[in-house]
Length: 169
Length: 89
Image (cartoon, rainbow over all chains, first blue to last red; front, side, top):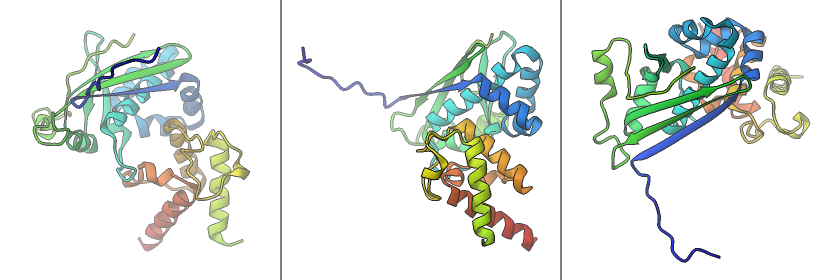
């Protein structure tokens, strides 16, 4: 039976991004390109964490690649925006949770999108890795009222640390 | 064959090896969108690294944008720009 009523559910203050990566693709890329692949995509901190577990390194890299892509999806860059993948960094906290730390161009994109908060969740197993990013936007969707990521970054010389939680293993 | 055509042909071979496209390369013209032909973000990284390896160049950060890898023509244009920059330096 066709529904009789319809109600538009607004999502003007929330945005979600998701990405899925085949772990075998990452394994193949590491085998083919080695450090050129990992160093172009991942920060030193990310590489240290992933390489610490040889058996699951590719899974960890795949999950982080998915997190970067999911973050880009909520940023919605134009085809002309140049984005260094390392400007979106996944960090592991002491309690095992993960957070996204923004650098350089990623800060500008977050500001332009009017993002005030960002949360990531990642999951991976032998075949696939996935990540979901949820952000809260300013009510207008513009930069007015957006979090001043660069000011936050100035307080922390290492980068910006949006609100974010996720377990990684 | 002109140098430009040779460059495009080399790019085409690399796209065929690393692009993991959903259509046959002989069905793909130089201006066709590689993303619409199935190029994923991850495959575009492999494509970039393979092109760098083959041509002995490195794409600078400002070229790490979706538009650069949109088509064989756009990749060739980026290569041309890089070559001109290197020869002028």
